[in-house]
Image (cartoon, rainbow, N blue to C red; front, side, top):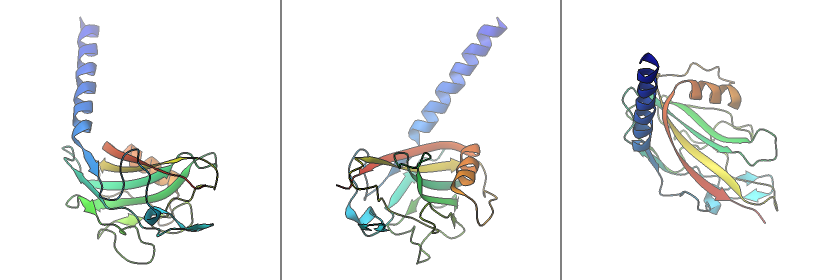
Length: 185
């Protein structure tokens, strides 16, 4: 009896979590699921000549218990053995539900007040656009909003992408992702 009740309880909790996660929604005017990003989201440097502009992102229906947000942009197809962090921004206050295009600027202070941009894999704090190797095929760029259970992630100023990713994942209640594409011929 106890074993059956435990299984039913676990299945109910799993289903409830999935329902909650399905309501948390990320949208954008600049990028779309399964569609190619524009030149505006391409990096400037390493042979790329794009606008290096982080996309506008908006989220809704954060789950109960959310205390802050984090945004990540990650390319798992980068030929590094560990992917490529294009953007990690943490400690976005609970009252913020949108970042404008360019909020990830490395030269202008456009990120939400109180947030912290982590050094990307290009070596700068903020957004670094797509720049896959020419001829390497289509790369998938995962822009994810994370609803966090803490108001602030306690990270050192020089936190690595891996440490930041660990802390984000350890405190995530729900996520929503837009996976956009980019390719250089």
